[in-house]
Length: 79
Image 1 (cartoon, rainbow, N blue to C red):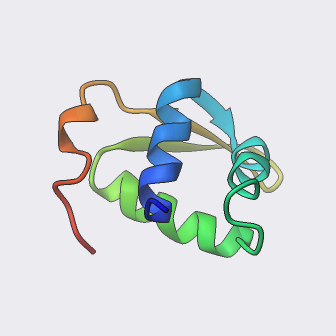
Image 2: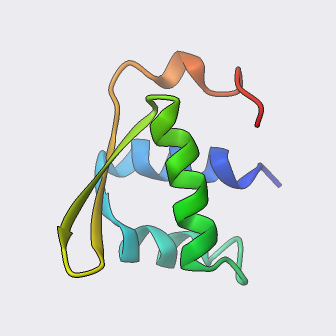
C-alpha cells in the first residue's frame, strides 16, 4: 500500500479542490483508522513542501487545493 502522503496527494490532485471532511472520508476507504489529526499532520507537511494549499473556510472546515506543477515532485521527498 502507498504511504499516506502519496494517497493524500493523489486524491487532492484528482479532485483539484476538496474539503477536509471529503478527503477524510475518501482516505478512510484505504486507511480505516486515520484520524483528522493524522490527516492535518500530513497536510501540513505537504503544504510546507508546496504540494497543496490549505485554507480555512469556516468553523473547523478546511479547503485543500492541489498546487499545480507539483506532480514532478511526488516521490522525491522523505520526512
